[in-house]
Length: 251
Image 1 (cartoon, rainbow, N blue to C red):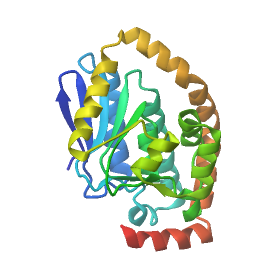
Image 2: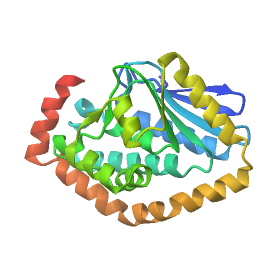
Image 3: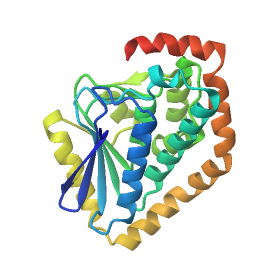
Image 4: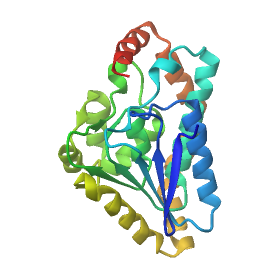
């Protein structure tokens, strides 16, 4: 079974997550999405990317806690490292990317969204945010730094320390998302944005994007092993395990 669907709109590729209603992130989804991003990076037929969901309720609920909580430490560490590397690939791909957030984007789902160049969100009963601290774990270094780049240090601090979820209107006000649209317009607007950016001279865009992402990429890679170790230690702590098992009731 494929957990990622790709639809082409001329030279713009729309990647839809399709792992059930809530798109929980597990090993298989990480590998398939990672492989897809790598293929699109090399493709001469694709000049821009939109990341979306196959359903309108969830963009992604985040990490698949019910599955991952049973992992041994070494197995879980590999997963977290692979997820971090996927996020880095998405953040640095030398092509424009737009997240079409057509449902809740929380925790790891929010992380995937902020790794894109732009974020458009559907109006309605949808929430976005990073609640990791409330689960007893940390927000990894890469999304932390990207969030500061997107919305500024004070907004990043409020989001990461508070662990709250935000409505589309509040997220737009905070600068977390770049536009909010009716649900039936969201994909069209996202593809339109990606297409317009994809018309830029390829090498020029790639060079500009590398300049914008290089410092965060270098620091994230330098800290990667330590960052993964810290997350794993917190995940297996008694407090986090208790909170994660409580969170499993929402899956």
